[in-house]
Image: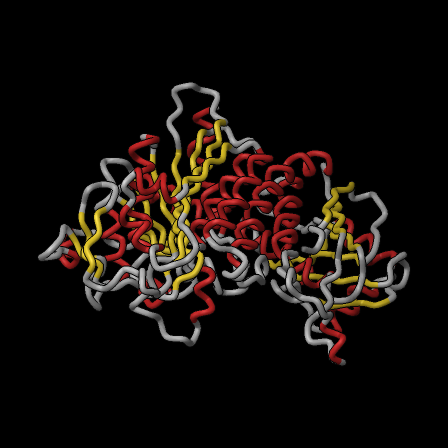
Length: 508
């Protein structure tokens, strides 16, 4: 994998190196350092902006080669607009990184000053830009053995920037604050890596073995094999994987960071179907390759737990991942089979492609039985129906607790990883009643995302619970200034913010 982008913080007075990136507010407003550079250039920057009709609108930029009066071969002026929200600053940092990386060069200097940064302190503004740049710098090229230029054409821009120096006021404070944000970025990158891996490389066993490496970050790692899952009577999860030659696993990651011995555990559960053919109810061939990403929920949980441990979050948290592979074979479960879950409830499997909810059923029950958590949040690429309803802009949120739903929604607005609350209700619940078992695993054509959530809810006791359907956001999501990857790592920043804003301070 490529080396991660190195980010340093320096005072505004320090001499820039490499490509120089300046920010302009709306109507070509420049802050002090940028005005000073323009004066040294005898107004050449302002003249170039006028000639290009550049006014500082967001997602606009102009480039100057060999700018006069300064010791740099290239200068880029980036529009910052009037965006003062955190997500706007993250996107600005990602866009600035992309502009700095457009040509070959090892280093760039970003002057983190705008005339009106809103309520953000100088160090917060700089840290947000740095975080956006770091997130944008991710690229998954592990299996690329040939450079694009070797076929005689440059079919993608050169992304060779290795070092970004952020020039700002209070550089030392910014560097300290960035340490925690960098830990979150590491969690996002882990989640992206896992989703991007092909399924022949990353099956349930390989996924579980990678989780053992997280012990280096201070996490307690436990891997349950099929014999242990059978002893726990996880019949629903094991039924999903029985058609595969690759055995199922459940991974438990624990982080003990709360100062109080009375602190209750925060619990996160991820669906980890490492490849989903649909089983006997096989999916169409077109697009099936995307089902390597059907473990996006588990990837998010892994990234979140790494982030919490790396920044030493002051909470107790546990992350559980149900890892399996849904394949057709002579051993696979059949439509019409009835399986018994760990809870004792029976499930009539009418469609073997509605398998993620079977995985969640057992792992959710186990999590509640063992950890008695303060709340439990599950993430799953559960239904295509949620994409029909919400597209790829929002993840679907189903929740039995208004306070928890409000906290998740607020965290989503802050980070840009947005959720939209969907309904739960007894009328929908009736759609999954079965005449031959306690329930069936599909509810018909209508309200597919809701009936999937209703199914999962039957395995939740009286614990505050949220189900986030990330089918449209965890993989092949909309590209943005902070993510150009097929695997987005969606949810890591959202849930880290949820913890930091609502639970971490209370546990210190």
